[in-house]
Image (tube, rainbow over all chains, first blue to last red; front, side, top):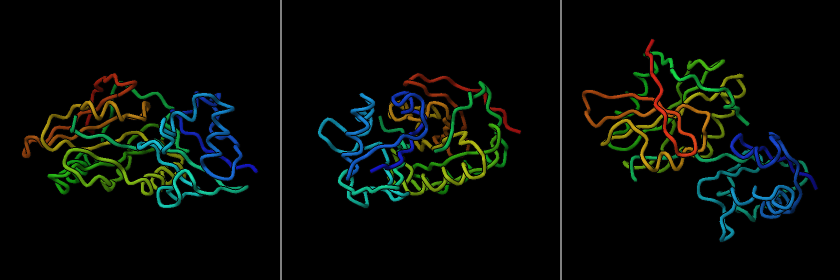
Length: 94
Length: 142
């Protein structure tokens, strides 16, 4: 089962500079595990050590924010597109 | 996904209408932080996208993820670049905070800061933030 994953500029160094990669899995978590197996270090940018979605990473399945779906347990299927976007965030609080 | 691969010049050319629109946005949101994006063709700032601060906060900002994706796509579909990310500091100078540096995930973008610390005298400055290192960029208003 192949899902297209759009890789943001900042993470492309993990995947040989590619803007898109294919991955397989039944859920987002499996998909990211597949990517981590093939591109060691990639998954750590997306998933925390506790196995949660990193707070400052936005993940979308077919343009839907997965925080409104099932987060990392969101089901994915052949032909879906997953987009990854680092948050645009900050503030004067230090 | 949107490209921000173009090397930024050490100088940022900012149309005065867009500078004024950022200041107006910052004032409208005061005392909360305002945030948004600047885009345009071939590295030239041509449009401002005032965005919702999903944090709804006076001390932090975060673009709403759904709106972020939508506007990134809009910029991409026009064949433009995301050139800058702006936000306001309502009570401190127009300089990237520790939080700003830690959360600067777009090293190829220009980070524009609008300070309303002196409400009648807003200050706009621009920076490159890479790996937490801050370099100020010269802003020329045209």
